[in-house]
Length: 256
Ligand code: PEP
Image (tube, rainbow, N blue to C red; front, side):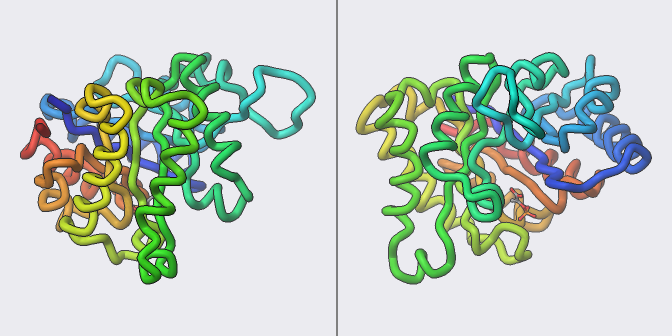
């Protein structure tokens, strides 16, 4: 049985003042929602603020990236242990915005995935195809290649302590989500590919859908058998919208 998980990805948004009221409203909104798990991934400078406002609540916090090296001469980088020091439990790895705008590759994403696990963090590993790739019928090739970057290097067992996220690029930040059926088809493909290597891991790993999740579409997405929750960008910046998405997750508390 897989419990639903809703993760907010704030991206490069926020200010100390806005974050305070957003986090307080989210905490108040999900306090009595016991049937799912909640995480917010905030920009690095706000990890301390997230820690002080979220500790002792049922909302966990995490980062949106990390550096694969422990410490040393790497100007501007943030190590896994620094995230742990700030109480992070999760870290997003391989988001499409980082793959495209910061030239991250399957290989570097896989390296960071491994380092996150070693530090005791749960990596939220993002995969997804572009519009052109979908239109050329390459979705399974692209998503399979991204997934295999972990499986080939580390084995499917490594996915047991991770969360996966299918985030089609054409749906992220566009306001045009995948239909529940489109998303389910790819989630089922991902789970099936893992099952070829390790059926138990495939059965238990949570696969989130990300790409314009909103209160209006969350329930239909979360009702799908292989969709175990959402990775939410824009709507995670609005407490009411985020809480409504968390409520939708609680309507379909368990998958499988
Ligand atoms: C994301 O950033 O991971 C995301 C899914 O964004 P949005 O919900 O805005 O599409």
